[in-house]
Structure formats: C-alpha cells, structure tokens
Image (cartoon, rainbow over all chains, first blue to last red; front, side):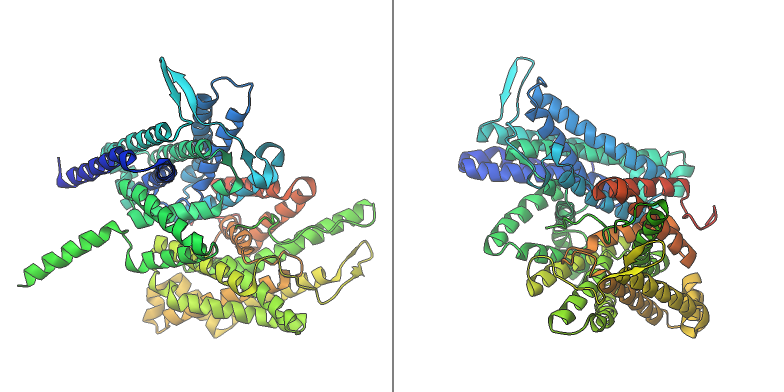
Length: 328
Length: 305
C-alpha cells in the first residue's frame, strides 16, 4: 500500500471516528446541522468524483441535486405509491442518472470537452431552475413543495424510521462514509487510472484502446446519481423542496466546497462543505447579501492564492520546511 | 437570488391585425429584435471565447452594467441617448479592469479563468445590488408609439434597436477587415507566436479586443434596457444564450456568429408564441446540444476544423 493511500485511509478513519463520537457531545439541533452539512458534503463528493478525476468542470451539478429532490418529494407526497421512501430514493437516483445519461451522451460523444462542457451544464442548471419555477402545477412554483415526510421503510425485517434526530444523523453519516469510501476505491483503481490517462491525453488513451467517451459518460452518470441521492436525502430531512435546490447559486457553492477542500481528494470536499456552511451561517446572520459577495471573493482568492485547496497549505508548509533544510 | 425573468432578451410583440401577412412580419421583426441583441452580446464572447480561448463567465455582467448605465443616466436626469452612449463606455471600463486584473494572468489556466470570472460576476452582481438596491429598475424608451410599416404596425424603438445593431455589426466587420488594428487581430488569432515574431504586441491586442467585446456587450445592455427587466442578476440569461450562439455558430467568423444568432434567437422567439418561455428555453438548449452533436464545428463552418 503506497503512502498516499495510507494517509487518505488514516484521515478517513479519523473523520469516521469523529462522526461516531460527535453525538455523545452534541445536542439534537447541532446533530441536525452537521447532518445537513454532511448531505451537502455527499453532494460535493459527487462533483469531485467527476471534476477531480476527469478535469472537466460541471457548472450545473445542482440540477441533479434538484431533480433528485423533486422526484423524492413527488413520490413521497403521493399517497397512492406504496413504500414511498424507498421508491423515492430509487426514483431520485435513477432520474438524475437518466438526465445525465442523455445530456452526457450528446456532449461526450459529440466531442464536447473542457469549457464547452462547462457552459452547456451551466445553461442546464439555469433551465432546470426555470422549469422548477414555471411548472408550478407539479413543482409548486416559487414556493416549492412542503410537508415531505421523513424517510421510513422496512428492509429485511429491519424497521428504519428517521423522524428522530439521532437515527437520521447515523443514517446520513453511514451513507456518506460508505459512498465516499466506494468512490475512492473506484477512483484509485483501474477506472481512475484510465480517467487520469484520458485527462492527460485523450487521443493517446483512445489509441491504447480505451473508449474515452463511454468512460466519461459512465463517470458523469455515476456522479449525477449520487448528487440525486444527496438531493433526495436533503428534502426528506428538510421537509421541503424549492427551486433554489437546483439553482445556479448552489451549483456555484458546491464548486467552492470542492475547490476549497481540495479537488480530487473526495474527503476534502466533504470537509470543505461542512466548514464553509458553518462560515456561511455565521456571516449570513450579520447580513444575508454579504455572502454572495464573499463567495465571489473566495473564487478569485482560490484561483490566485490556493489553486489546490486548503489542504495544500499543509503540503506547502512541508515543502517550505524541507526546502529550508536543504538550504542548510 | 437568481432571476425570475425567463425570456433571454425581451417579450414578443403581438400582431395587431388579424391577417397572415401581419402575423408573418411581426414574427419576423420579433425574431430580428432578439437576434440583434444576441448578435451584439455574442460578438464579445466570440472574441474572448472563440478566438482568445478565454471562458469569461462575467460576460453577462457587461450587459447588466450597460443597462444600469442607461438607468443611472436617466435617473439623474440625462436623456436615453446619453445613457446609450455611456453604456459601451461602462462596459469597456469594466472589461478593461477585468482583463488587466485577472484574465491576462490566467491565459494558460482555462479552469481557473472560469472560476475567477465567475467570482467577478458574483461580486459585480452583488455590488450593483448594494449600490442601487433591490428590485427591477425602470428604463423608459426614447420613443413611445409605433410605426406603420404598411403590412403591420411595430414599436418604433424596436426598429431603431435593430437598425443600431445592424450598423454596429457592419462597423465591426469593416474594423476587422479594413483597418490596421483588424489586421493585427486577425494575425494574432491565426498564429500568436508568429504575430509576436513580426512585432505585434499580442498582449495589447488581446486586451484591446477584449475591452472592445465588453463595450459591444455594454451597448447591447443599453439597447435592451427599455425592453428587459433591469436587475443585477439579468446577465446570466444573456450569458447562457450568447454562449450557445457562439457554440452553435462555430467560432472564428462573423458568418458563424450571425448563423448562431439566427438559430438561437429565431427559435426562441418563434417558440415563445406557442409555449411558456422557460420551456422554450429548454427546447432551444436541447436543440443546441443536438446541433453541436451533429455539427461539432458549428453550423457555418465546414466539416473539418
């Protein structure tokens, strides 16, 4: 096992341990705050899985989050559908994956990469939000849908009821941990290696026999499916769904979480999501319109000062230290 | 919060007389209004995105700044025409600062350009909101009333808008094909190293071309201000549509720009008669994606790059 993997697993283990002991110290409200932040962390990890591995930036990832959320809301609010929670989650994941598959097929097989992809997905996000606002007979328009019940289902004799704070926290933490671990093992294995090869030089990767568009498509669909899952979890925990969940601002924020946490690390974006949301809540309590302004500044600062995320400060300090020793 | 206004530029005008000829001409003029606006916004984007390979997500804000310039001049008592003259200047100033402060440092880092310009776009939106306050800003057109065009009557201001847009386009074509500066631009676009080799200051050429594109987008914002809902967040709709114009039309030629504008603007305008604006937007997006899949190098360009 190489050192990089060992480090990652160690940090992962520390995070899981912190997540396990946290309920012993925190009250119900703090648990729900961290739980919601973890859901957005899952969303950030889903974007990082695509952006970090392929180098292609999706600027409308909240569209998948919103699609998942709306499908979950519509399924669970419909009394005629049995097993609402389970079917809702499955529908949310499948719906987000389906939309990603259609868009991804045309783009990847059409040779669209880089900035072109970013722009088309940006427009996709804008349109998803507009659709959520204007299709009010189904989506509830501007005010969205409220009264979405908490997740509750029976699976193999096990009764899962997430109406309480602690069970829902444990459920969300477990899903986030399992998903991040799974994404990490995919991206460090052969699949991730081929994606890195495609990112470095797609023509060469194709010449070696790899079907580059198909790889990119499958990665994109998987990423969108997890974003849909995060959206479904979020609306059940929050109890409501609104057009903002598929909006540009959320798409923008998730990029910041990934960029601040460190692109390509999967764990960094989750931590980035948690920390930045805490900061956002604090700042917004002073003045709500200050946040987008600061967000804009964060973008510019990241690009010029910290292109590899906050975790890179550690590596830089280490490099500085080593460099100092060499100079002696 | 993001805009609630759906139409990319402006609403359609309904025909007044119930005959087919009237309907046809009105539809055509509505489409032409939208196409003119998209062409002007897309022009700057074609320069930065298509030719310099810079993805500037703050391009929509040039339009916003232009529209706000007209609003500001009118609100302090100036005429619309004075505001319209101020609009491209405002766009150029913002564009020039953006180029100097950010874009020129990131020519070799495309993803960083995307992030940084998006940050600037957020800062500009929020800054405008802090300065001018929440809510839509009223801008009154210089000419009320309609013009009788024999087959139909059409709002006079829209006809002026189409005229100014066409004249601007003509001016740009002449600038690029007939002047020494246009020659510089064409040289730099074809081969940057070679252009430097023959003594052209490519940085300066890029900076001027970028500022010029921003000025034209500002002019577009000023022109559309009386027809649109003037909000700090209005830019993103133009941004998305202008990018489609450039992508669908193919980069690198005025012909592609016109073809892309006709495709996106025409389709949007015609669909707006039948269905809700956001559904029309979604269909145009899908059509654009399919068009790009079928013709990756744009409608206008040949099969190979």
